[in-house]
Amino acid sequence: MPDVSLGLAGPFAHGRVISELLAPDDLAAGVQFVYNVTGSYWERPVSLSFNISAGADDSLGDVQVAYYDSNAVPIVTVETGPAVDPNSSATYSFLASWTGAAAWSNGTVNAALPPILLQPSWSVQVVTKGGWSEGAISGVRFYRERFVTGPGGYEIGVQQDEPSSENLLQMLADRLS
Image (cartoon, rainbow, N blue to C red; front, side, top):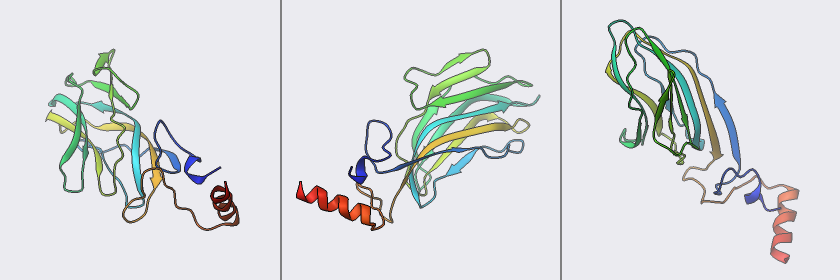
């Protein structure tokens, strides 16, 4: 089997995928969640969930998830719409497979998480709108698919592996067929 078909994720090809769950420590009051993509991978977000609390003096109007490029320019911003009342909390769940509008039910918000490929030096950020300094973000779980890449990124569908006997034999078999 050619290397390009091993470990594919979803209806596209970008080489082998490494699925990982990021579970960082809870953030201090008033600190927003920021995840920076390293230079070793291109990444595709699958899901992001977290709890947000608001303090007595907070007036949290909206919570957004935004992807920023290396120049801190937003690529996409997902709006959730509902506010978090003072002295309350809500659970936010962003899914790549969510196809509808953001929905609010019983203290939980579900919304779409665009499954685009994030390049090295890009970031994913939870952006709070309104006055928010006493509340905190906790229970962050970020599930992502990571694709090994080179300095300029590999072409779509191409995975460059270290030379091995198995890979060399497969390449020979592919050429002869």
